[in-house]
Image (cartoon, rainbow, N blue to C red; front, side):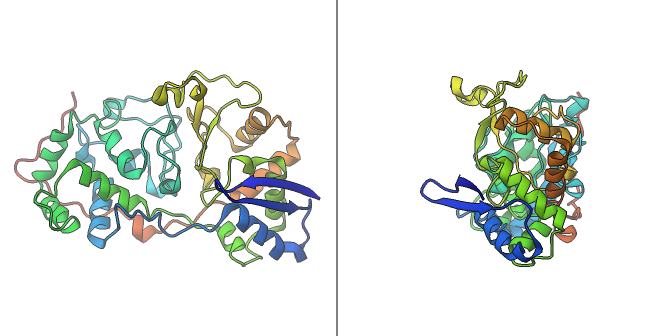
Length: 347
């Protein structure tokens, strides 16, 4: 028997015993063990400080798709985090204002509200704070300041009404923070349950035998050291090149904390929908899932996997491809601009 100790919280430690090559009659047992490692995917990442309401969700959805929040009215949240494309754009780095590109890959917005923080370096505490960043980033949406954003929103009568409905009782509901709260509330329900969730919930025929074998390879290899919890990752920070050095120019979290121990440290990504979200790593430098599995095993776990082991893990990861709620994520009708709405600015 292979026994792996995993810490699921600061105070709870589980022991999970998994035998290689699980037989069909062990599906229920394996599902229980997997549930202990990963837990159930919730329908919403609930926030006590930003409770969801229908009005707030409707507003957040509109803002998410509205490119008038960008300087030239040509970039929205959905441009880089395409909800029809598993929450990102399959590019190493995304084009922003005037086609500029940053240094990091756009991570998927799906299930992201479950993460320990936002952005690869964790510089935003939650999705509400994250939503406010790209709008003012000169490479991304390039709005010059918060007041410029508010001038746009306040010039659109439909948004004035929508903010008042989403934040009732506030004297001036159209604020930059409320913009972030509305988008964040919408994003907190962007969950993608998959066949893997069906499996750990008791539908033991939801995974194929090869996927079950891949799950065991994933666990026995030690991938769950970092990729655990409902998001199958996103719950901790880790150095890229933890065991064997990996060439990384990006300082990672060091740029946020200025602590030397955080150099080349990044938030561990979620593996949900990973088969659909190539290319990989913070800089989008790895084009295939097979290659990133090999790299992670070698540099993070000091293991040289053979082709069959890599393929086994890849097959399991395919079971994490989730179901997108097309009704919830459909592009809404946006309120029309008013006579004083600022015009696009390509400068």
